[in-house]
Length: 393
Image (cartoon, rainbow, N blue to C red; front, side, top):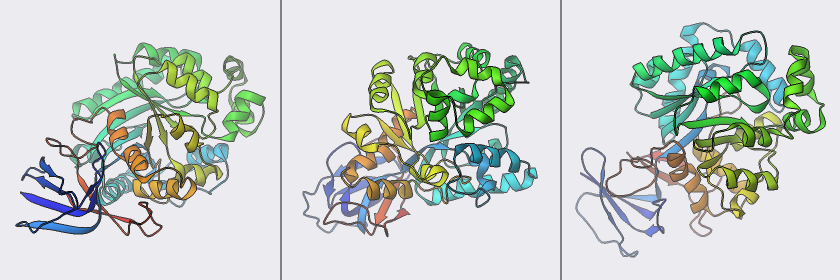
């Protein structure tokens, strides 16, 4: 049994507890939460820490298969250039890729992450995920607009799904992004989806994507035109990325829209009205890395959207740290309270990945992981540039 206390405990499901105490059994399950009303008395074997205690963080969107691309992609070169660079540099020896995935898994664990929604295009992460202490839900990502028939793409994805499930790993087949899916392939993805599955899709990530749909121009438009000009005819059926999502995603699924850097205000409301179980996953440091831009988080916040956080990959980020994402949000959107940002980093991510019975909040009966955030600004009740996470359990 262990007993933890700190200046504040943020449970992610109730008000912060000043000098509160959390008690866990030997299996790391919470058996008691004590509100001392700020009056902390000496208790046997109590561990007191200077900072704030929180649940373990949830990384709702990552690509650990791309970890080998750390420091190999030019920053702020735009989405089209980013995609091209990834394609050009993706060939590497399997042992190097596996080592980078192992390091990424360790880095997330060290940074207080307990569960991950991870994109996979192959089976290179299975062995590491099977042994990892982190909870993974793998999104087997499908994309294609030309050359390889839709049936072949789906057959490969279904084969990959069986490999993950044979390793006792949760997984689902999902589309990559509105601009990268042919009509036939989207139909095949839909017909092969499971009832009430978790679906993730990159949405309205870049200005190039906006220009493609709205203005029929830009680098991404030219790139797709050079590959398959006919695909542009299909994309002309949608006013923008969000319209593709609105017309194609299953409203009965738990849907996670990733990035959302250029989603307009009316589309936020339109999509949230149609998709009841909808989560907006924000990856701010990746957005800055790729095109030096951020989503309108103040608009999402004011309209009470269900927001969760991701790190994206080390191809588009310098670290796999949810705390770093939270610090960026606190810097650019100081009007958003820390307690709200923490909910995005914990309970909302757990709900999005359908694991909130165990993770995401400090509640009796759960085993959510215990983090300590040090160097916290108690006067303003917010993060500082020097804030850091220490994993307690």
